[in-house]
Amino acid sequence: MSVITMRALALTGRTCVALFALVLGGGSAVGLGEKAFSDMKGRDGRDHGQIKLIETTSGVLLRLQLKGLPPGAHGFHIHETGRCEGDFSSAGGIYNPHGAKHGFLNDEGSMVGDLPNFFAAAAGEVETELLSPFVTLSRDQQETLFDADGSAFIIHERADDHRTEPEGNAGARIACGVITARK
Image (cartoon, rainbow, N blue to C red; front, top):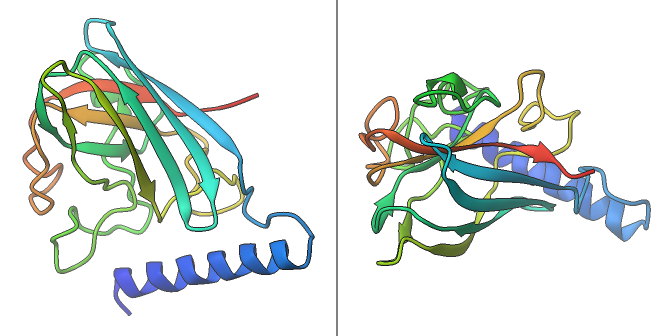
């Protein structure tokens, strides 16, 4: 069974369980509505805005409100370690609990942490929403962003080509933010 098929089955199952729990009035089976955030910083410590995360029945909704980025397309990923030090290599590789290949255009499927590119306007601002269907904020799921060493977002200097290993030929890591649960 391919990684894509397994993820589709997992997503369908998770969505069905969540919907079933909501229909019965028993609350959410996947922490529906749980929220987290990530304060994005550049390598020089400069503030680049915030990403808000909200658990939904279809995955995690990401609300990006970013600033001070170079205009144009940027690769964007969830990385496996919740650390943002130095050149941001401390965040490790793209979050990949299933051992998949990189990129949405890869015939062997994509990594859990692969996300679409986004575009910064001429003023360096980004305001958009993206859905990451293969992750969760629920700590009891394999694809949780809150495993033992946490997770982080990385923004790259260029667009991700959605195929090239390991990070889509997207260039340097220019911003990083640790994903933190709201209290």
